[in-house]
Length: 546
Image 1 (tube, one colour):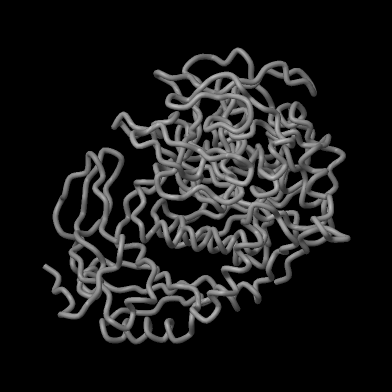
Image 2 (cartoon, helix red, strand yellow):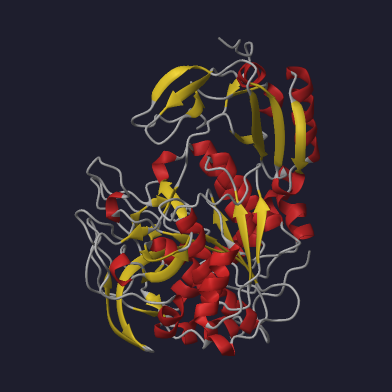
């Protein structure tokens, strides 16, 4: 058993690994097994006031004249304190660990060592677990920190390697009677005609997609976009924590998520550069991928689409704090983040009879995307209801967070969500918006040489993300966190969906915990994005430098 640090060490709050149902211990991790961790540090304490002021500007009930921060500005107010980084270096030297990488701008230090060294350094015992979906490594008890790191460390990610998320896509259990090309869904929602979308010169016309598995196939993309009459988009892969685009060769695996994201985004925002940030499916990989996208000066994504998630309770408090730090950076940097709200209805796949919400959709720094069933012809929406194929099928996620309070921009709009669970507490309401997600009215895509129809809120994240990219290009500036603007407008930029439910919640007039404000009215959303900010002569947010 690893030797725990001596007296005077501190427990890292919220760092005890969570149990995973169905997992069985298989013995200790081999002492010489290589282990890497990401140590996530606090933002520099001397800039706390500046950070609070900036966050107030972008997340308040009304949007002021906040602009996207440059990377240099972001480092100045959100970067790690150099003394904290020094302390991690000293800790590594004392415990025999190796500093692999340092990124003070995103407050991360990567350390490597053997399992024996890691266990001793952090005061945990590392154990292998087996699970029907694959083996993983975890640990007992909380991470322990020395006195000099007790206030500086937010999370130590990588000791636990359990899969943290699943793709939010669905295949129909039957042959769909009606399905659409992504361009047809975009047309129904009023997106500009594809040949009228003019990419702006230079950078800023990039949409990132975050993937935790699978890969893309160039030949499939060429065939697909040729069928749409569009130029095949340029796709780049950014490797995070050693992961790469790795197609499995079967449309039943994670390739389906990757290709759905790329094909929907590329069809709805033609000409955009698409960048796949691929990371291991762990809390460490997820956090590091978002940080990599925000820091990416080469590709400079204005929008990041995330179609992976899991119940918010499946994250430890320390890992969730690290994730929120990365999403806060994205909001301050003007990166709009769209996230699928889940495909298991109000239970989010948790079998305890209670309502749950998906994460990171529940974060107050993202635009959560729910699902509908769409019937459309050309530019006309003939009918739209809440997507719900339960029991036996999927349904849009949505509900009330048990972790995050009601954001100011929700309460100011008269949206004060109340949980369906006993106690009926309030919290961040999910989703914010919605779009076609029912696999029975799904998207025609191509995956690993196979043409098929896919649905799920996975499709809505890139669908809405592409619209935000078009709106940003039209406005000439990044949109960043659009939630305050959308809520301040009282949902005028969205088509209200009032029929249906997702289990514990029912749709109705105005915002609801099934489809949020409803599906996009693209013309109205783009017009609002290009309007001057209140009290200004020009657009409310400027561009972003490197």
